[in-house]
Length: 289
Ligand code: NAP
Image (tube, rainbow, N blue to C red):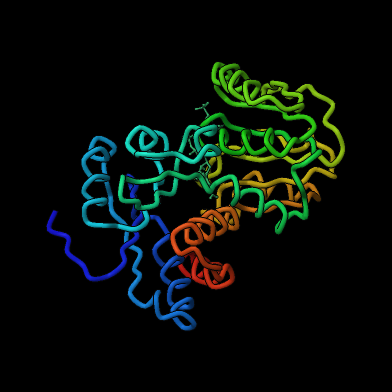
């Protein structure tokens, strides 16, 4: 409430937030952008730890203090949907927002995770979602964003697997309501008795791998060697599923580029200008190291 600033403020809110590398990533990009455009000289990106019970109070306060942009991370992405004045139609389909833009009437919400994932898969794995077969692990917020992207980009077949199977039918129902011609199937990651197609894209959107001691969310040896694996976890940098996939001779990547490109897109929304992704990448790697 005491916040006072002559700068153009941006911030990420989460609980906890200490681990976030978004501030160094965005501030590095802003410094670079300021070299060619003085408009960005006084733009600053902050981070605030906000308990989910406080989000309803904090967002109007940030709006009043004229924070131009807000990023939301765990556990705020879904709750925030009900606390903003307008939502981008693509974000509404996902049921989650991670980027808010200040407007005179309130915050306008977007979801840039799908953009980040699509870019990451293209850059790290040379893969496209359109027409592909995709196996998706998880049924939380990140998995939902990935699943909506897959249906919207018209992947051929989408296989959904989650530790708690009860979450999969509601997800399939929501995806089917989007229309499109993607075939959606459900599988059990503990016993995936499916003959997986060649060149399938396997996406890990579970938290399995966040702890070094975690078991992988699926036995990678059941998949053909042509499988390409995108593991959304980036810290630790060599998460267990991506590691096992590489050991089995598959192409695999961790989630760093998804994090970077969701950030690039967020900063594009706020700044309405091109954002230096390479500078964000350098700063993110440095912060993680
Ligand atoms: P979430 O909503 O809490 O969902 C967690 C998911 O992980 C659930 O499907 C849960 O299954 C599953 N899970 C948790 N522990 C597991 C285990 N030991 N074995 C198998 N499944 C397990 O979280 P979220 O926001 O979707 O995030 C999921 C992951 O994506 C996190 O690791 C997060 O860091 C990552 N992520 C990365 C980016 C990026 O930019 N790279 C962006 C967003 C998220 P149950 O339903 O059975 O509990």
